[in-house]
Length: 202
Image (cartoon, rainbow, N blue to C red; front, top):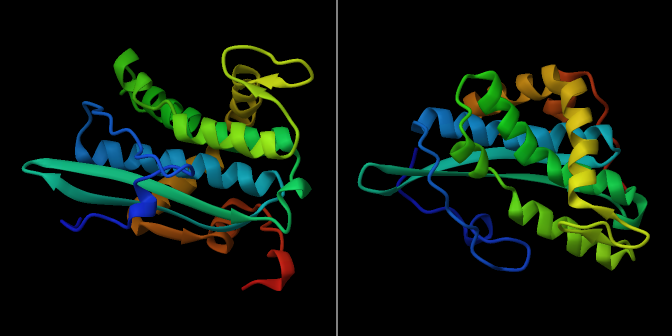
């Protein structure tokens, strides 16, 4: 763990707004593993849904006396976002917070307050914006005409997480130990396929 604050792009969402910091009531190690489960949820569903996974990582730093902060990032690419099924993209976005909540449940750490500290609001907002750019409507708290609600998308993601939990758990624990994994490493340890990078990127 470092005392250096990470790059700004790890602290803001896709709109450039600061990500909300939430106290979890967990130990540093528990919070870091929870974040690894969050990123593993994104990573595994990205692979299953045909996105080229570049990397997934967690990081932690001392943000104050006796206080640590953890965050993570998963990068994937597609030649065109339109090539990714919109609802699968949204389910991948929802998978992070859901995998984090499943971690709390499975490891005997769940409380209503800790579950509420895993909202994935920045993931939800990014999915809303990306889908809007593709002409699809993703509603928050309602089902828009011709679209889906975030609740419906979370249901899709939850079913995938349940089926893929062994792979997500493997990735999370390995990421927790190694900080950063490449998409090819994650594909190899899960038996999933990492689609080729768009345009032959390395």
